[in-house]
Length: 207
Image (cartoon, rainbow, N blue to C red; front, top):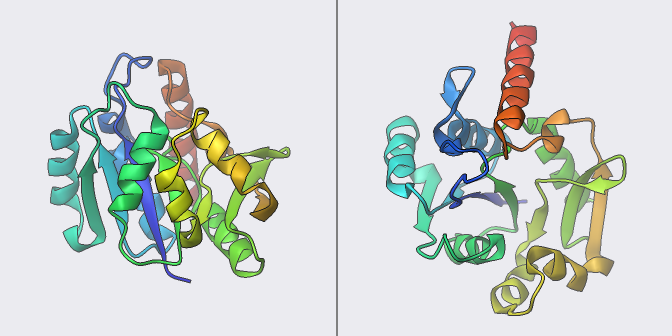
């Protein structure tokens, strides 16, 4: 199964008070950790949907990675649109693939094993969308079949992504995972410090 990934980093970081994608965790920026998690999972390309201070992120990532593995696209209306708008922009930039992961850029701590479990579940089922779950609750990153693309791009209703997922409710599978990284996103400074402590402890454990 050929997969790509979409990372959403168009937001203003208003609740954090600092620009989240460029905050450091264990020697790397948050956005680098998010890109790494996608690439380590075996995706062919990562589409990075930029918005606020997007040029800074693009310059950083181009200096760190093989640019043939990255595609940059911009949500120019980032201040007025929701996540679904950025998802549509990311989908429009996708190259051919069987399925794609969706990941908010403020979730840098997800384990590679989670991506692989989600992919394995899709391969072994008829699912069009697969979510990892913790305690029965859906988490990121979902893996979305390319057969969902037209509906997502054409969706104009209220409710954003949650409403989109309802359309596919009979074609959704879930897979339980043991991954604390799926439960923490960096909305606030307290969240950020929690992520830092978790990721640094994992790094020290590996050493």
